[in-house]
Image 1 (cartoon, rainbow, N blue to C red):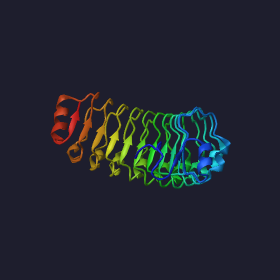
Image 2: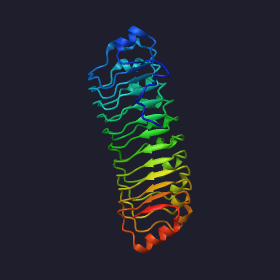
Image 3: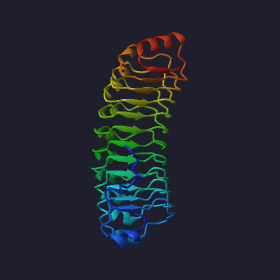
Image 4: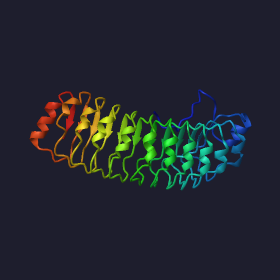
Length: 287
């Protein structure tokens, strides 16, 4: 699941300027304008109506040019590492989008029109200043990969639990004080990252995330863990470092698939350390 910066030159020619594309093939499908010190998109871009991939990463954009949202065949749109403040409602017009990368900007607001992105699978929003996610996210029913780390989020909308195909969720470096038990409905979730938040507890229903393989919940304020955590039979990596945990769940030995358990920076007694190691003989445990 690589980040979508890369065009595929095997699939079709990749052009590095609008002028070049117009001169060689007005039906061009791939355009890479990465790191070209651009302040705006050339207006002639609208002539390239067949574009499926456009990379605008690493320029000087402070807003999203309207012309981009006239490209109705776009499947991959990359605006990573610019200075964009907001995303226009017209993003919803790009209903063929599969990958949308807006990471590393100054975005504070997302329009509810993202609900029209029914085919979206990969959504990158890391390193922005987003304080709320619109309810329309729940309509992005094909979403599998969502990165929201390094924002200013403290809650997610109720509709978030409707993302039944979500496999990878990164909420690290935000301001979450609780793990919403509605998220247990994310039944396809395999990778969860909530490190560096303010979590005090995890819900007793945590065991419902049956497909979870990796959980990074280090650097929070956890004091105890729900017993249902031991029902996560597919869990391979669990990081709980730098919390306030004194004791692990009683039936810890049920985590037979666990290969790495990180508990550094917790006030765990020597006796409890011995019990944990005995319960998990096939797991690398770090105190």
